[in-house]
Amino acid sequence: MSLRDVAVAPPPGLAGVDPALIADLVDANRILFRHGVVDAFGHVSVRHPLRPAHFLLSRNLAPGLVTAADLVEFDTESEPVGADPPRVYLERFLHGEIYRVRPDVTAVIHSHAAAVIPFGIVPSRRLRPVFHMAGFLGAHVPVFDIRCCSGDATDLLIRNRDQGAALAASLGAASVALMRGHGATVVAGDLRQAVYRAIYAKTNAELQAASLALCAPGEMPVYLTEAEAATAAASIGGQIARPWGLWVQDAWT
Image 1 (cartoon, one colour):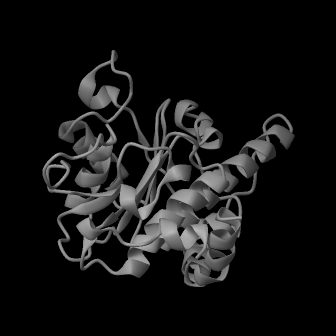
Image 2: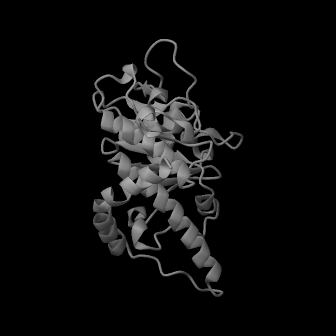
């Protein structure tokens, strides 16, 4: 039996949940770490398939160490279900409040990937799609500024439901929201698609920054048009199965 086989084995507390979904959630944590989207911080959740108002998220643990035994069910208040819960992520509220207002969303990823940070703090340089793999960014990537709801003396973390609701409102119908001085939150209707988006949002940020550095004074990169972004998102979005097996293999070797 391989290390992965042991790590993804469904725990008793998640009886009835498709083992394949549990495996995907464990794999997602490992893949995001391997691709530098998350490090010791960051987290990924999936909507509970049997109780859609609930979601599954690891206990407070570095993503690269998560196994199925670490997964916890959270209720509509973003609180862990069951007696004697483990220590959980402080920012679990951003997951719960997005699920509350976005019935189309099945997975949420929050990261502090360094590449995206500049595009949330330089108003004249917003994150825009520069290549076809990031068409899901669309024409506008919103930037959430926690000062809008909690003043200018916070630690920028999403510590309660009100702050989570403010982030969800800023995200709107988008796939990605940057968080000023903090990171990014990525959503999708499928867990594997969310992982794809988180990886390529980071890659797009790296390419956009490199492109901006090459520009002559007064010059700008040639971004995807809104129509190109939509067409590319629809086309590439149907190819998620292609990299997934490779990413899983790489994450466990």
